[in-house]
Length: 281
Picture 1 (tube, rainbow, N blue to C red):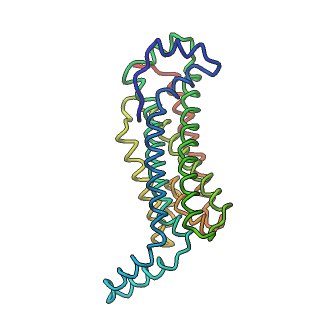
Picture 2 (picture 1 turned 90 degrees about the horizontal axis):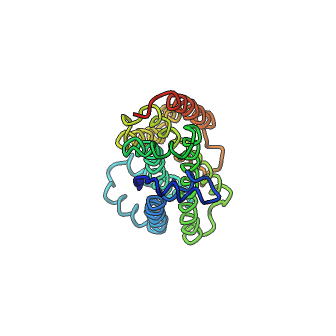
Picture 3 (picture 1 turned 120 degrees about the vertical axis):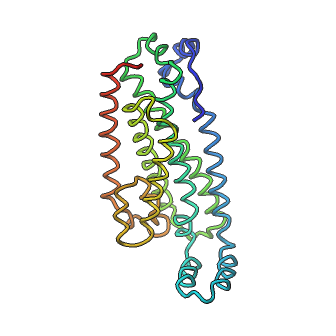
């Protein structure tokens, strides 16, 4: 996402800097997409929270429309009694998580895929960089970009909560949601990054986006009933669907959260091993 072709002159120029030239080059190639998607997600998150004071009027209108349907009326009444924290977790934060997942998967794929596509790995190897160093620098770029993305979203979300929340949320819970979302998006990013290492050109941005949609669907299903909470183990986004801001840390399924440390780590190990032992072509 927003990755352009590497030029030998770019790499030579970066050799004069104090930081790793590969790391600085990845920053140069990816900052525009980072700024764009961070602003889009943050503004939508802000707008979503800003709608909270108007929810009563919206729900009252819907209650009149569904006056004869008791089950829907009960659902709408529950929604009408939500605190700002629960509303944030159930509605607004899903914008944050969805865009974060898309950006993480897209960036993880592109960091590897674009170099196979434009042949720029040949230039990287003229700079006496080992394959492991190339991968680690790209992985570091992935993590830092996702931390920046989530921090921007958190700032917009916090400002909106302070404006419209009337102090009815706990900052420590919001901070926890922010940290868990950082981890969840990094897990998705590493998952996509590892699949790109394993699949090279075969794993493209379309597959990365489809994976996020599957993760998002599984996470959404966990809201539909106790039995469907089994789907929590199938998606790293499940933790972002937990009502952390409204109810605290007791709602988190730490077992499924831990699984998504193991899965990306195993795939990353296999991906790096495959990448080091295979031809670039």
